Image (cartoon, rainbow, N blue to C red):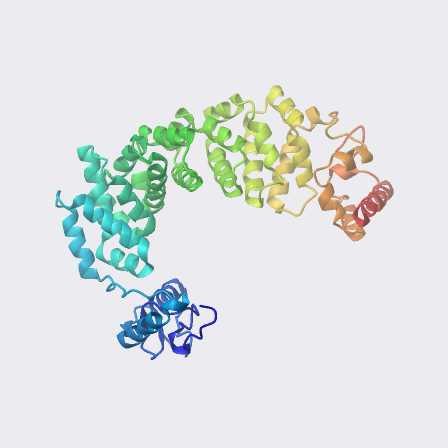
Length: 468
């Protein structure tokens, strides 16, 4: 087909491919239906015609160009010997009335499974179909169908219904209306998470994504009255395993619901703290770590939550290890967690544990990097709080050579120039930090001359390493 010259008017101006379903917009330009629909539905600002640059409303009528389609099909037939495939006649586009007819069939037992399968295919087909389905009220119908399955104990059709809801966004106003009319919708989705069925990992992941959407739109009247079984089920699903998208959705649900004190108590009793630490020990993606630390911070505001946190032998280690290795948001939440632990549960054993796992050295490292002032203030608060226990520790009172060999900031320092260290020298007059330590008292301010010599020496050492 590469040797055949395709007529220019057969080519879509957007995709630069032969048009399969040519349609003409109000500006008089013809495009392939799939390409122009994607252009219209994905544009965030005022849409314009890609060719003429004239204004083009998102709800513009797309007139099928039957004559051009027949010409393209005839040309494909003539060149079939050259490997050109004939373009099939496209199906008529879906309209709102067809969707309403399908919704009516959804409540007839004899057509139920067939109808919900058709809705799933239509939702997966195109953005235009999904918009028509939202306008016709398909998301609300799917939620009602799931509620009906919950009451009957029926699992047939659940996978398809949840798949439709994954494709189609549920409007917030519609969620609030459904919650008023059907207060069992959250119980219905919780029941789905407990069900054992075929493709249960996919089904439960989709159910968790829908649950995330609902809890995000629900008000405090709904979220502060959630049943203990709701949280136990989410923890159980995290323990058994679902898709990564489902895990993030579950963490979003916990984060949306944990600001209420009652929910925090229930979540702690459900074993949420232990499961979150276990999940973090598996080295998840950065966004997952941020969500985990966000939930842990809320739960560590309770005495029982801190006790559960410290009962896990890897809790302090995994939180401190993520500092300076994930994101600024994760650093912020990690420091908040350690602040709660040091302030209210800082026993001698806990303080020594922080030294052993490197939490103290990570906190000191935070003082050397470019981060928020409020975060550095929290770090200084922790260090001042337990400076008596930590002042003689080898984790702080190390020599310059030892610090250069073990510092997690060495790759960063090697990229910095001599001027950066002179800036650090000026800052050290008011900020006690690790580079300017005293062997006897690490938080004693050194003399200006000794501090300057130390930084110049350090700059030369790092400069040589950077040059290599």
